[in-house]
Image (cartoon, rainbow, N blue to C red; front, side, top):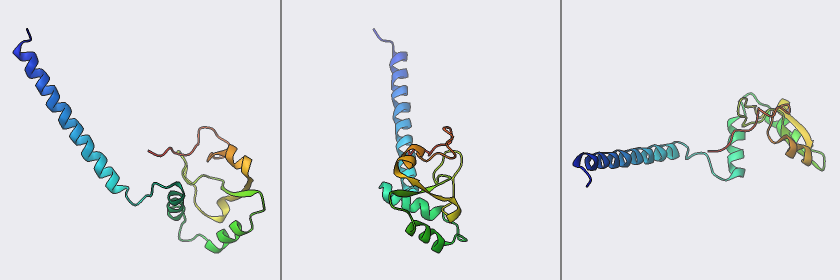
Length: 123
């Protein structure tokens, strides 16, 4: 037969677990509210990140000309990734380069080919 002490201990554990779950739910809800301005769509997310990473002093005309002058079969790549784990680059003309599609896929948001410096994973 189960003693009263162990039953009360189980009830206490259930209450603590329920409170912890409620607290976690509240934290997640608060986190989602704070991050509501960042879209979930990869394309829209990229646009928001580019806007955030573009400083006021950036030459937007030069950036647009760089994109417009892209050779056929090449993509515009950021030398220092905009969303790096250890380093985040800016969306400026000095941080842009042309890469072939295959080379850009190999680079995969790394900086200087360093495997440890990669893009931060979305949570």
